[in-house]
Image (cartoon, helix red, strand yellow):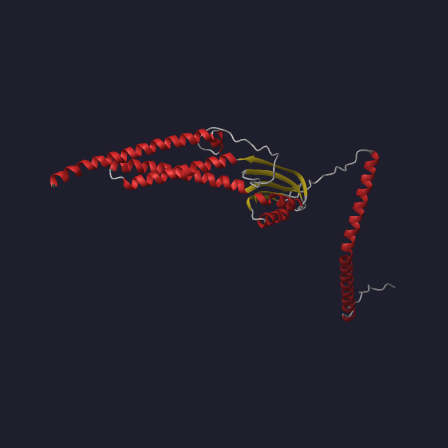
Amino acid sequence: MSAMGTRIAATSHPLRRGIVAAAFLVLAWGLVGCSSGAEDSSGASAGALGYEGGGQEEPATDGGTSSGSATGDRSLIVTGTMYMTVEDPMAAADDAQRIVEGAGGRIDSRSETAPGTYDGGSAQLTLRIPAARLDPVVDDLRGLGTVDEFSTDSADVTTQVQDLDAEISTLRASTARIEALLADAADIKDIITLENELDDRQARLESLEARQRGLADQVAMSTIDLSLTTEPVVLVDDSPRSFWGGLVSGWNALMTFLAGTLVIVGVLLPWLALVALVGAVSLALVRARRARKQTVEPPAPQEPVASGPQQD
């Protein structure tokens, strides 16, 4: 009886290995068929998402609808540009940021240029606005100044979203089946093969999920590039171009010189008066001192003049 049990145990191990290998082959064949069917059905749309296939994304034909995914089950990516003239670009940029963040959006980038000789500065912002709130936010932004140009473009990515969801769902199911086979595998070769296959599928699944998140963000948040500038500074050339113009220009220059001279004289006159007063006081003190000196000091005695011999 024990010998028979030993023979049965000896034959059951290869049988179990054969069953596992056969199950793995059937699963691999089924996955190849599923993935090829998904590739055939997705066609050009898969290439637009950056994975298998080589198609090109077709733009929407709704004439630039300014809403992301607000039309039925359609998935739209809306992008646009807005050029505005404002009095203060920096203050207008702060107001635009408050408007967008108040609507639940965000600012992806912002750059500012200080005022220069020929302009009053500028500001550029990349606005991410919730698709359902795009029109009200744009209306609020119009109040910041004068809209010079505004345009939007929308791309319908409904097919890409559906194909990506289907591929992720299929890949998740196949990954779960491989995990189940790996849990039941006993042979080291089968375990290595299943682990390699599982790692490849998990890496592919993570990549597709990252693409799915990026695509969902583009659909949910419309992108508007906002440019804020001021009116350009106009330099007027007023140089004379005729004799009369030169005469007028010279007369105006003379009047400007005289006006400037009068201003300078007006500024210096109080100081000149102060200097004159100080000088007069100083001169008076010097003269008084000299007069006192002459009064106090006696005159020097005069020596007698020697007389010569008198002649008869």
